[in-house]
Length: 597
Image (cartoon, rainbow, N blue to C red; front, side, top):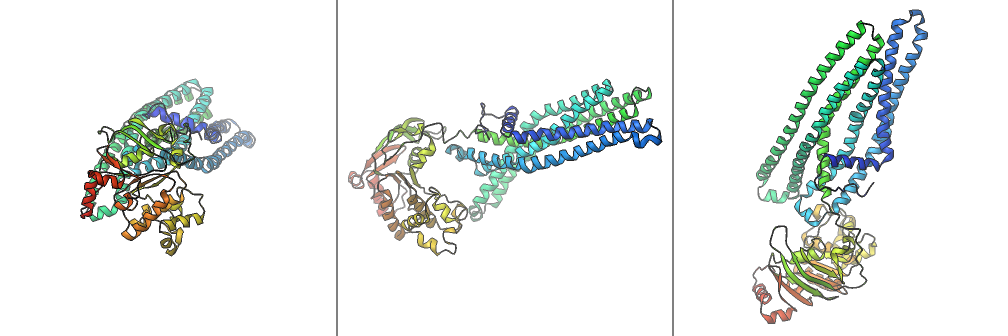
């Protein structure tokens, strides 16, 4: 499957782009595409042959003496049974090669590639959208695309082939009926196509509103404890009611448009069939057509009208599906390819020097969180970052990790601009211990190994011992195979944080990033962890956001941030001597006041 499947020149996705996506997709699966067209063609041929031989059957029946029927009916009967066998074969071939082989495989490949594309979204994009919405859109793509192809097989390609063969068959009998069939079919199809573009937009709006509902539900369930503790059930139901009302209005608008379309089609259908039957009776009465030809024309027109009405009904479903596909493609289109694989990899063989050069950064329209920040961290230096809430501590860390891009200025690691290297190689050199450990609903072993899956069990045990979590894990009935639960819900805050620390011990790296790693630990455990962290920092350039003095004292240098600027820097002892912001906050901590650095 093409890696550029979800790439478009335009950011806004319309019906044209959705159709282009399907064309590109089908080119990636030539065998599946062949059967997608071959099966309806075979089926349409069988239907046409069946009615053709049925016409011959009635002509022979009307014209041959009864004594010769056994001989004269042999040819049309063989044709009828041959057409029936062809029809059954077409259905079985479609069932095996399309329904069993092609579409399930396509569904899996789409989900895999869409998931990979979504994971490469920028960090900002993940922050803007609810995770439930993104999951729903990937799921939608995997469900809707095969569904669109299957509906197209039976309700677009098949009727189209039947129409073409009907026109040829009827045209050879009488040109007037071929013209009438052509005219009413063109009217029927044109009305469908005209409504399709409009319905696709309405379907996209409906899909967007339904995805919001999914996002709201996921968000509520993931915060169910807060909902219960703060009596939020009524509030959540009110939010849901707002979203469902929007969805209801969107669905009614879409359904009303189809009601009008069906009304127009009914008028066309009734008028043309009345005219067709008038001409049929006239021609038969004047011996211009035989009974068999009349049977063929009526049979094929009836079959064609049945198929086209089915197509009209299916266009309602297709409109909704196209809308959902369009929403998913728009979401994936915004995934700009964070890993930037076309850029060179970061080259690093030793503990690096880090340089911030006049860096400015702000979130969208907000004022700069970091303003003209310049900073040099020498190789192997341990730097602590402190400051009041909103001073830019976490933002500085995220910029260095490549999660945000500076508005201006540059960041260098060992002389290499981090915006000019692919992000995957950038993240390979890091160990990160975040404030929120971010555990998966998998085994403890998988969570510890997450950054270094090829690590041996012995290495895992060693890392967990250093993080003072091995004895606890070993005491569990399933040991390291114990499920951590969603977001580590089966573990305490301290246990989750120690698993995150063990994960950092396990992964080989040159740079260590710590964001309040001991904030949820008790005093005794913190003392043990401080020794482990000191060991972990050896031979690495280290940045630490910390609030506790015990951690800050391990640092070679402390940076005090306020309103996006460095207002103080120096060692722990130097900053105490300066009696500035750091000294003031430290004094308040010693007097037992709860101060957030």
